[in-house]
Length: 160
Image (cartoon, one colour):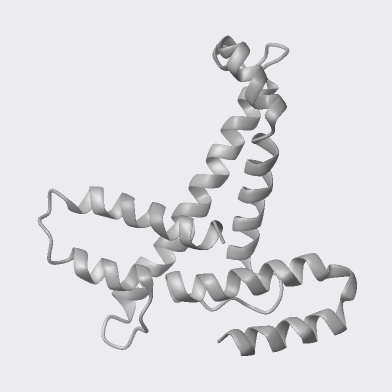
């Protein structure tokens, strides 16, 4: 898997060297997403890689020391109306939260649907194995286990 993806990355670098950042992101995401979700990343401009990259870009921009200090010193800024000057930090936080939720939900839905569609012949992945294991659990615990699995899977590939 890694050798195949490394070869694809080299071909992409030769074809479009100015897009090296995108090629490296695709390579690193492809290996992790294959192991976690059994998702085959396309060689270029993959939609799930774009979702992850967007969420991480916005999230990292939001987690600067300056913003943290401003919110710690002035927590009332999160309670300002959206139209009020100074509330851009609140709007940015909402956008970051939405993108992070999308980053958690979209690949997880793919893996869940993939397990349902190809139950017998689906390859092994972290999410697929745990979804099969969850089928044997009590119904009351399934939502809690599902949320924990979704968060663990996101950490496994986004925290690379």
